[in-house]
Length: 225
Image (cartoon, rainbow, N blue to C red; front, side, top):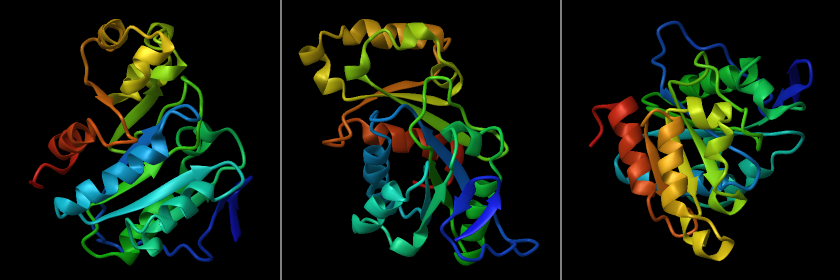
């Protein structure tokens, strides 16, 4: 395992420099707090993109482990070689915002390895509501929040909630059990986002995930049907 900068590490022994002229896949970030459902969303997205004929790969971020990457590799949803793990070794948003070098290198290596790659999904490590992706790293990014964490999350106006391209309110099925007014939560989310895209999902069952796929295809991939 080679250390690239400070405490950031990638689980690939060598990361080749991309060839001049290698086509770059679209890069979509998935951020959000710990436990909001990022990895489960990722697992729901993979087969849906595959069913649409999208050639994809995955990068996951964790602090000092490769737990999420190993989970996705074991899932049987994707060739394990197409899943790279980044160990950030610091605040998760450092590796996706302040210094995304390691994630950029990982994405470049996937472009190098897989001719025809169309999409790289980059899952951030679990972070707080201030987490956001550098646009040097991604073309589009989602922020996942959890109904069970409270319907006041949109009112807190975290950077992730406000600035993401698509806000995903996950675990909507739990609203009745945790005393959340879901209709108000969605309305307030749209208000603080100036009516930009908000969608509801239950990533345990896959409810609402097709809408996320449709949004990414419309806004990022364009020519996939």
